[in-house]
Length: 272
Length: 363
Image 1 (cartoon, helix red, strand yellow):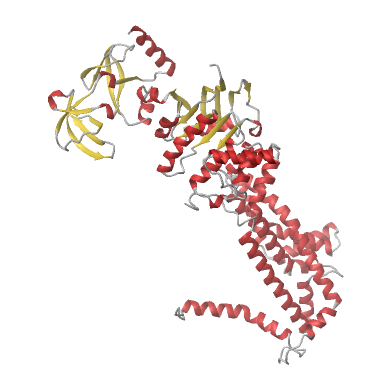
Image 2: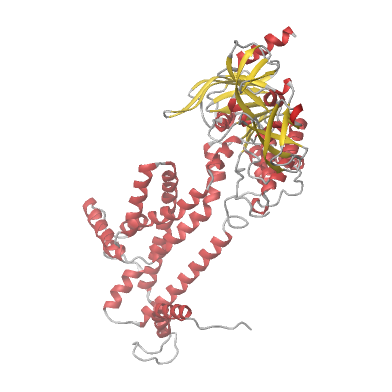
């Protein structure tokens, strides 16, 4: 049998992961408690899940959140992919400035972005609600997609497109039959990242939700302020499960992306 | 030329202020194997890209089959290319890669299947159709790239440094196969390389490119035996290049010593360069040698020995000999008048051909 040594680095890693996951485990455990507070565990029960299922307002909000996330990440993926393709064709200073502008959006605090959207929408007279949330989600998802797709595009050999022309393809055929399939794994990665960003966004959404429209994170925040309700725990447990599934889905797609297996650049000596 | 398929007339190519090609003029005959040979950055790949249609010339005209094709886009030219990095589509398998061109042109499925199978057979890859590109070795990918190009039955096949990514043994094997394939198909091949051995081995015609101009063109034997200038002599094969003076017709002086040669048509006492190939120099005894010197080094290379000898005028000669000698020994070097090739400074290809004709007729 393999000997297992307790090393300092192993210990360190274990401590880090315990600290990271303990609150989530704690929360999930109490979602199954029969009591109404988190002070003591009162035995196993599913009553908070039952409460959650009968809470129509909460169910509506869950659906709102999912629809916003799906739509926003879809639109952002299309715009971001086209953007990445355009950035690829630029050179030198223009390229660097475009990339920097893209990255600034990634690093700037969500609060600033949210506040600026609020001012922007108010100025334009857009009613706060579904549309404003959707637009702002699309906006902050685009840079993510660009960052995920661009490396895939850079990986493509420039001769690939030349080869397509050489074999008689038009510009559109070269794009749709050669470039697009080759960068598909990057596009999927971008879509999933955008999806998770949109699903759990709080700060930006908080600013741009109006009366009568809310997403999960905003709703949970406002409920939590009124006192701990274990229904929130149940909901959080479910959301955690969904995130796990998403990560798993992303892993499977990136592992088996494309048609048969992952797409790799043709390199010398992969198999000799 | 009866069946010329392609012609460049005074073609120039610039990228911004950078002149890549200047006044390129040549004709390509159908069904032959041409090689564009030159060091990297010489402009040879640019010529290929102009033929394929990926780039347009800054000035000058390109004709294909008698028609001017300067403005014909790449996807409408009857030319296919084998790229240096093969440029195989990574998301398609072997058969799909080969079928791509036919599919684009809307050829019927049954015909595509048959032609793909034929093409794969030609490059000795029958049965590999369902394989993924990533599961193919370097040499196999090379064959897929060739199959993908020839399946479209182009009139001209362009090969851009197509063999340079392969190891030496495979490269030599592919040279033979490419040459056979070209004979079998009867397609014009235009092959770009920086490897002079490859060029000599495969071509009907070689064009030596340097610095954006064609230095010399001709058959491999012509170019090897009668290089036009220092660059060509140095680039093709190994050579001893020494300055000399042409005293009169058929008499050249090297380092103050006179030798008879077979070159003529130059001004008396003109300064020239003399080329003697290392394999034309023979080691002999001191009294039989036209030059006398001491052996400096000797390297065994399998087929022959590479020997360097410095003569009494302190000039170093490279000699390739199948006979062994001893380092430090005093030896004689002998050669025949035909082994001396005289090159004039700044002579153009036309002048060179005219001069050769003028005195060869006299004989």
